[in-house]
Length: 246
Image (cartoon, rainbow, N blue to C red; front, side, top):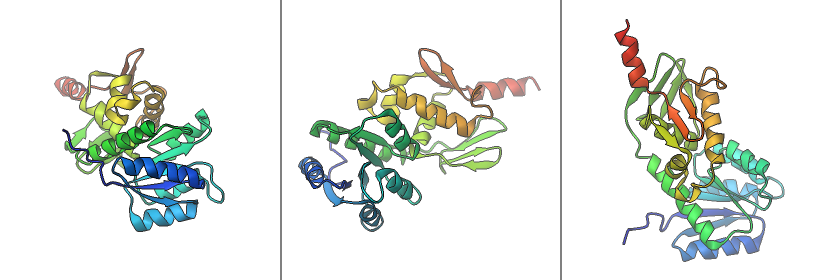
């Protein structure tokens, strides 16, 4: 039997509803997680700083500081994985959470199976990225990628990528010149559970283009293969052809 690396991980649950915290705690502890709780935003921030949890489950609708404000403050100091809990399930809420740096969202009400599955998926992909190291890649005169140092340089300036953006770029670059389907990207970057949610890919491709491309509307690095997926430019071939013509 394959060992579950998520066992014993410390999860911070933040929700102003005591019954919801109890429900989440019961199900996570049943699957081997350790759980601590907070019932408002300020308490959550204190717990993140003092307890250093492996993940935060963060409710959107809270008095005082709402989930979005708490997420913003967490992201100012940490890349800890955060899953937003929302009762609305509206596209605007989901997009806002992702834009602020959330790793995922779960819409209430949710089943214990969905909760545990999402938590494990986010933990798996954030743990996997820590082992990524492939050296410096010079795409062209504008773009340089250093996977060892986790640094992206555009026109000589360091560009900050969020963890999900970094993972997406990593898989695109590792398969430069080849088309990667929406489903393949979802499985590699977000986890198998997300293979039917292509809006994640479209959203984060747009984020990457805005940070990397000279003209995001006419990209030259991350290319769309309509109806199939995306392809990172074959920089090795382009560089070879450029040198051969000199």
